[in-house]
Length: 368
Image: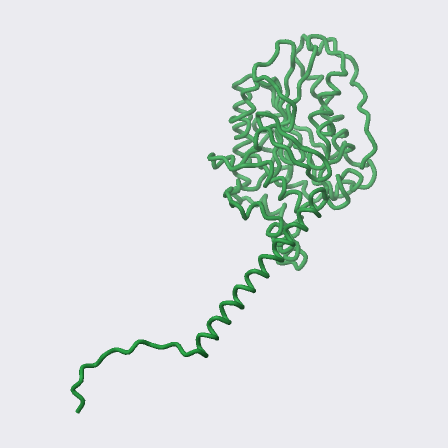
């Protein structure tokens, strides 16, 4: 029997085991370096490729990354950064000190000015068109070309923000645009404005990665191509189910906007912009848009359904900013203004409208 006290022996790593461990660590380091190196090259290449592109998904991501920031109000979620600039969808885009895609305005309205605020999403913002080709600026030019006694000058402020729904548009009006004391508010309603307000999170440095944005956008395209996500018709129609909280929110926001403008003695006009894929024949969202018309009628809000003035002007794609992106181009925006302008002139305060001249012609530039 061995009565010697037991002494724990130190574990000794054999030379062969130590060599294997070093080899694994070296290989892992090489792998990490290789992934980072090629990711860096891919990031640089994508930044060059998409610096000036017409790729809808990547340009929308650039818009969010460069011209938007989160805000605390959950009914708003995000807004434009003030004094921002970017090159998006083939055109330069900039925002003023109030975050509007427009020139600077004083909150105090000059006495001789009739002021209009245009609310809406990317169609009002002017996705893919120059600032001068937005609905707001075409309308402003047309109004100032008219001889309207009592109003030497018209201002049309573009308060459109891409990816906004009706709840956000109303909240934006309360937060920013109401302070400009408009005489008229025009809200341009689009089929996806019944979406619920998204929860905006700050993604940090990952939110600036072109590589990550590219991978996500291509994955999303693949899911839609394979039918694992609904197509555009199914998606838009689904927003108008009676159990959709986004639809309920949009209806309440329209009612609140009607009440707010009425209390302020501000006129309100809602225009309904159709989805431009199929307008020349049978339009797929007539019943969905009727729900919005019913809400507006119950609140005594005048409505212009823009589809009639957009039909019959060539193929639907002739109204799009690119063959793959059906946002309204200059031609479409001109046709929109041609429907808004007579209503505005007919509904100006009586002292101004009494001597108004005939509606001025609106010239359309060739589409791009």
